[in-house]
Image (cartoon, rainbow, N blue to C red; front, side):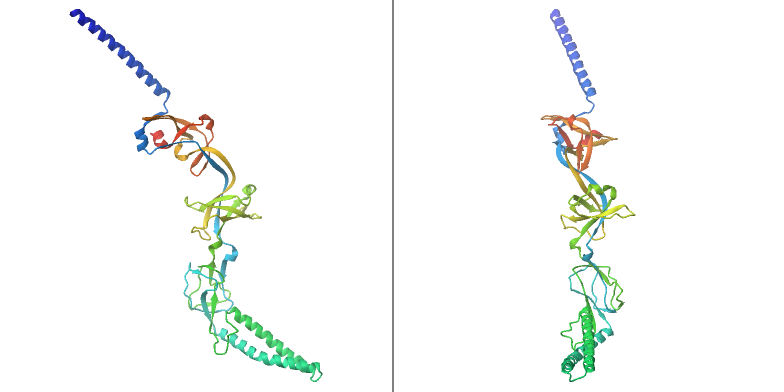
Amino acid sequence: MKKSSLIFSLVCASLLVFISCNSSKEEGTIAELEEAKPDTFILSKTQFTLGEMEISSLQVKDFHESVSCNGFFDVPPEKRASISVYFGGYVSTFNLNEGQKIQQGELLFSLENPEFIKVQEAFLIAQSKLAYLKSDYERQLALSQENIASQKNYLLANSEYLSTLSTYEALKKTLELMHINTNTLTYSNIQTSIPVLSPCDGYLSQVKLSPGMFLNPSDVALSVVNTDHLHLELQVFESDLTKLKVGQAVSFNQSGSEDDWQEGEIYLISKTIDPDTRSTLVHVHFNNKEFNYLPGMFAKAKIYTATKTSLSLPESAIVKIDKEYYVLQVLRNEDEEIVLEKKPILVGAQENGYFEILNTSDFEKESFFLTKGAFQIIRE
């Protein structure tokens, strides 16, 4: 019995020694693996899901070479009107506000001046004389041709008729500028005020008058701006002009904002250089006109001069450490875990949230990368 117990003890001791040796070998292998792969990360599928991470391959994207510049929104000269008056007068019937939309021919305000009455009176007097003088002129002409009356009487009648006709026509044109209908004007409906009408559709700006003030012909009362043909004027330095041509695509936005980028294209390129800024103006038309930009607003823009197609990754997949860029490449994607490895990359152009990857030859064609969540893993 003692002999059997001794044999059993020796066997157990041998097994323990054997197991201990194997365990030491396995631990050594793991330690060596971690030391050899310090940039390897193992994620469980639970961690991947809770972290809302994503995996994707290299994406084919277009990257543009561009010229960055600044400018401002503007309208054509014919869409901007400064309202002044032909005749001085006191402002009346004014009830408009800056920014108000108006239509062409709409009443802006009225002017009152006793001189307006005198002009209408002079017109009516000239009009009443004209019929008599014309009849007398024609009669003297006929008598002169038949040598019945003297040439002197004919010349006098001709002179008085043409002088009155000239006065009549001049006063008629003057009243038309006052927007007074000469066809219906009579002694009983002489007007004491004249209307000032809008020359175009648009919005009121720079209102400089108030009821009761005297407005001189040299004064600018207000301005009307039509934004239907709003465009962009970009200032491009002369060193970049050789890269530009009509029809090139442009992305632009209001200065100080990074959202709501709009698209357009070059419509005209000025043929002169500003000697002070060494730049020229580039006229850009919009593809979409549904926005709230106003004339005079500053803008920033990119003019796309060339396009190249490259493999890329979203910026959320790339982590910058010091001056180097890294991604997490998927080594294995198994049922329970995902094995990732930190790899250095070379980046090129950046556009619309994507980086051009220059060293794609370092990766296999079917490589996958962690495109969301890489920053947390590498930084931790």
